[in-house]
Image (tube, rainbow, N blue to C red; front, top):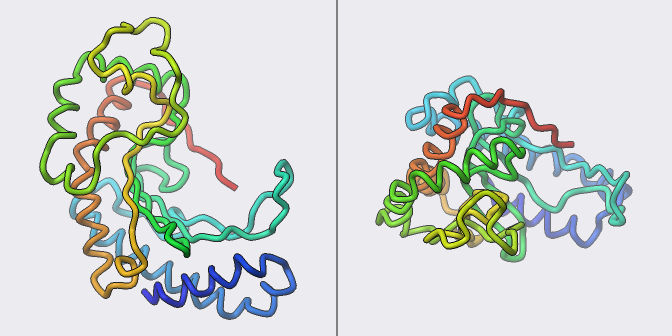
Length: 233
């Protein structure tokens, strides 16, 4: 993947986020998109040896369109300023399962994330219950040296101020119960993403976070909640 070209294109797009400029540079965008598609396919191919349920995914299942839905936003810029792909069982970017996300954005905003983003209410309750009942297992996952090499704890996005009703307020990991999303993430430098072996680095991050995804997805399956595909525009 020519990540340098992708980041340079996105850098220019940030400064010229309008339809006229994009139309003039559509050929370059298509080149960048095709390059990212090929990279995503390579990533999928590597990951199927680790996550067999990813077999059959295609880049189009995992990548988001660059066009923004501005109907309900005060920000009317027409294009996103990043490329992203999400690998997860049974649907890729539309899957409700925990998975793996790579985000390419210029100016120090590249990152990797794993886990489950904003599960629906029944699943959210099931995850909190599983954490309450199996916190020692989750402690072991998060204290493993491979995990700690890249991550520390769940991201703090969208946390409640208090432990939700029905759960013990004095629970040893009360902060985990306050989460509304269960992801871990780490920043990636432009040097990281432009390296020739970036896909191998990405796969290493996936391996380190896989036990957490397994914990979340096992909870999903055990709870018997019917999977619902998510809709992203």
